[in-house]
Image (tube, rainbow, N blue to C red; front, side, top):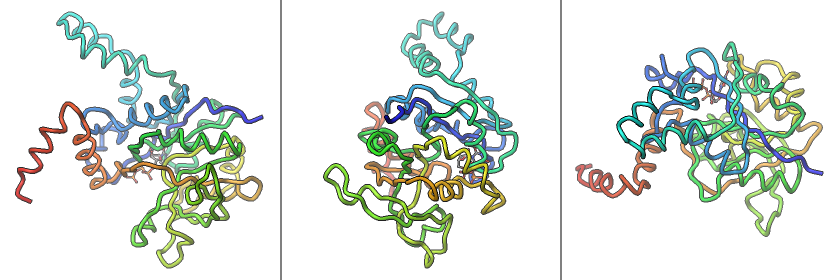
Amino acid sequence: MITKVRKAVFPAAGLGTRFLPATKAQPKEMLPLVDKPLIQYGVEEALHSGVPNVIIVTGRGKTAIEDHFDVSFELEQMLESRHKSDLLKIVRSVSDMLNVAYVRQKEALGLGHAVLRARELVAHEPFAVILSDDVIHAEVPAVRQLLDVYDFYGASVVALMEVPKEAISAYGVVDAEPVSHNGEKDRLFRIRNMVEKPRPEDAPSNLAIIGRYILTPEIFDSIDAVEPGAGGEIQLTDALKHLLRSRPIYGYKFEGTRYDAGDKLGFLRATVEFALRRSDLGAEFREYLKSLAL
Ligand code: UTP
């Protein structure tokens, strides 16, 4: 019997140094794409994928995240007294949206370390991990796509994306063999090995792991077992490599577009493309962009 995935963990305790000074006193996860904070896109992806419980791993200076998903009494009262019912609906929908728990990572010791903080709350269940600075635009939510693979094999699944050779050193890269699945031969892979941030000439493929994972609970023992790796941090990729010794791990090349919104250029790309897709802003924004003599 395959256990259903009911919980999604959002590591959000990183320092966001690539986005300084914006992230000096404000969490990266609260940067808005058009008018919605990054983390809300991730939370909505979890909910639309059928995962109802959210666990956010926070750290110092991250209270804005908790406030965002909480009831804002004064704001609601003000909007009510001014008869701003549309805005009131938007504000209420955020706090009504989810069942959320918070756990603290006291020091930013790496992504693996952040995931391990959620161990007690996840307990012995499979769970999703969503890195909210990887924003994905997709017809079927990316987590849902991974869950469809998990529901079939009952094993851990990571999201894969093809990355050009010159950019590969920024990622965890897999050595993997294709598996025929649902009539498709080039989306699902069984992972043989993985390397964190390889030099282009050492990369085993052009398939990089990006910020969506379905993990079976054995990952916690693997995180516990690994020593700090690249940058002195406890890396999730190292723990996945450790898990590979005893469990199969699949990689799925999801359908959709991923934006690295934790990086300034990636964030700008996402902002432009999300704005262009908006029914209330897109047409006017397109005209504006066209008017720029580029
Ligand atoms: P990043 O690699 O983007 O690191 O983390 P970062 O610290 O957030 O940002 P930069 O690189 O300094 O600009 C990927 C994800 O893992 C979380 C981050 O919050 C982000 O969602 N993370 C990372 C933690 O929760 N704790 C950590 O110790 C490290």
